[in-house]
Length: 150
Image (tube, rainbow, N blue to C red; front, side, top):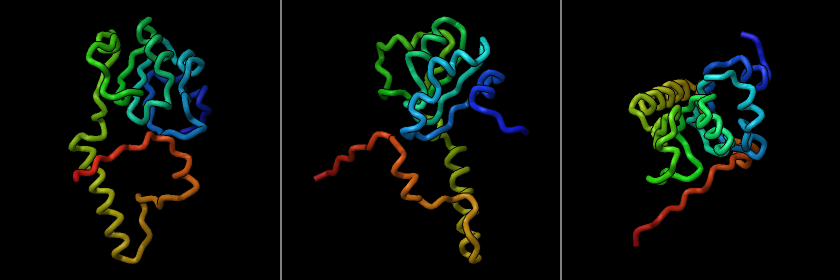
């Protein structure tokens, strides 16, 4: 495996999986210019955070039939029942469920158990990361409003 730039990777890829949290630096990381680099009929699967991709540009490429896409995260969720994207050929629309599959929860549990076993042996964790203040401050996910019962 050889390192490659984003442009190189996109121009040579028929399948692209976008798995990134949102920071100030990667908002619209995949925009019109990057989408143009993808070969015709390439597939883009977005399962991370919506702001990483320029949605109007991506949906325009799908509508023209140039790209196929699977999207699990949307700028506004849920996607309105009358939104035209629901009828867009070449688009698989998911309702923010990729991370909620039983297999994903099982894998997360396995990773936690692996690291807890290491910690119990006095060894450092391999899979978990500390929440580094300098990194957490860069994330730009929308805050979740919690309703407290009274």
